[in-house]
Length: 264
Image 1 (cartoon, rainbow, N blue to C red):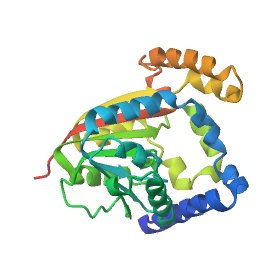
Image 2: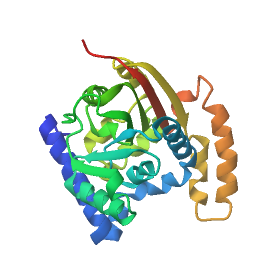
Image 3: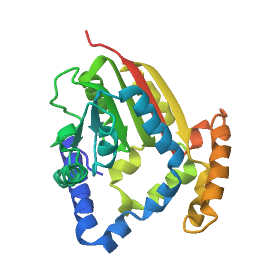
Image 4: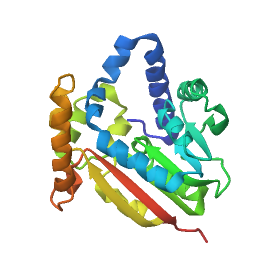
């Protein structure tokens, strides 16, 4: 694992530049480095919740897509936002995201730039909503939270859709597949308890967890049994993941933050 912030950021940028480049040049090798994609067949419920929250809280507003990746989420947000700004530390990723937005006709409603998310150069209060999707485990969480709070308007809000490290079985899988992520990522997957750090920057933090039993539907994803199995298991998860003993065991969580604490 990289021991300095600069080395870590370089490693992250190089890893994701390589990954995005393989997407276009070597699909087979790209598949090896993204073999965990099969699990995303069951993320419908968290996706629906994430975008529903954003439509309710960010329609007609200025959104920062914090770690925009290939721009898929950015363009979805551009359908209802006033403007969406996407940042990423990877130049190759930013290029792909920009091309994607142009191909869908969202060039005028999106802006993409290479930027260090731990050292944002935007003016304070530049955004009404910050959207973060599977990104915070790449960063120093405390630094990222401080930057998010800084660029939000006084009545701004943020939503983070992130993997959780609380489930020991799921986290053991991550440790056994080191080629899928950098060492820093593996060791910095968010935990439910990271809400303590979030409350140092926001007065209000809510959490909703997702995807436990529904993971059993992954082997069925290419069969006709998949959709009915997924639906049944999603209903089970909606009830089970509200129970105190199971709430932290989901694969993913949405963290919803509001009332940023203003600095003196």
